[in-house]
Image: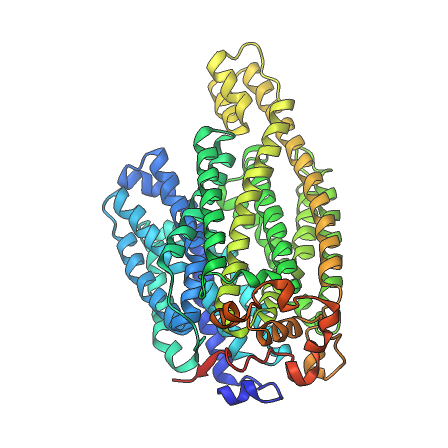
Length: 586
């Protein structure tokens, strides 16, 4: 596939090379997800071998996610500038080296450093792969299928993480969980130069180092503060981190508005479809992050399942999400995405209502029914949100758009864990009753959290311990119910946002089928409009004054002419004569 294919009036059909390239890129995507979850099972083994303290264990577990979140924007923009395949392959090489370093770490600081390096390398994957998929599959139908396959690889990583981790830890040393990255990333390094075409923005400017530092100063403290808020409740340390991150974010935004070549082009948010989809993605990550935390604690501390047992129970809803996500991607070819997302959100809200009927004594079939409804209802968002973001962004900003999608999910998850975790904790503390026989410090620990109550009950095995454990389980179940009610309301709000913000976006197969599209409302039309007004060339925009969303005409009815077939092309892909992505098979 060449530049001529993209520039012509008809969408180029991807062949075996592109599909093989997609398969190769899905493997590292799956691996980066596995590395998030597999560490939870390995922590006891690491602690026993390296003597890691409680604080060090938290850093071993969290630093990987922190660094991914912090570097996503930088890596996405860097790919736009120097080449997305180049950035992906460089990240793969670093990932292999860091994995070997982690596998044979001889001290806790060495392992923490290796995990941090893994996070930096892992941040290259999502934005690069999303941008490459967009360029490799210009046909709308094929792009929808490719995005669904890519989304499935993420969920497969969630499923396989505990399973593969458990098998490896049962047979080998804990370092083996890192060694599985070597063949996966090695395959990418060997085959991607032949299967994956390079793409970049040929008119990109230089990388602004102060903006990189400000983005790290914004994202890292914010994510850290939210995690600390979820872990220990309101505390000066968490508040200080959040305030620091917010201050850096404010300075970062102000700087981006003054640069001719910003690290993050804020005009992307002026594209109605992209900004609306970002809100949906963040809201969904918020709900699923908080729900995942509360349900996992419920299964472990109320139902008494081991971590591996919890992982096995969660396979069913995850598999349902993969299957229904692919179904949603196919249905979206003939049904407007807004309707699919809204219907799924209503189904998920109903699933949350089902969770309010789960009792502390069991009801696993009822719990699984509710979770299956939630995961099935959320599947259209998981598949369609990256597709809508990538097709609505100008081609030369594909890496930046992919980083926004991934960063929004990271923030949403962290916020959900923090906020909904506090909601469940507040409900627990309001409902738990500690017997008078339990002394002061132990009673305080039992009132603080259900984990503290379980540990305290083990110290008092008599009647007092039994009463405390029963009360704690009932109280945390009430916390699950309150969280489910809150998230049901959020899902209904999500449905409203989808209908309000995306209702005019046509089915994803409309362009390929040659059917009529509503001018100025499809993702491609808005991308074409943005490209034509100079959104892809910040330097030119700064000179012509077309930089603001209002001036660029993002989403304005009077600018519907931007959506004409001759402007957007029969494929529905944006035409950006001066900023189009440069593609070649090398």
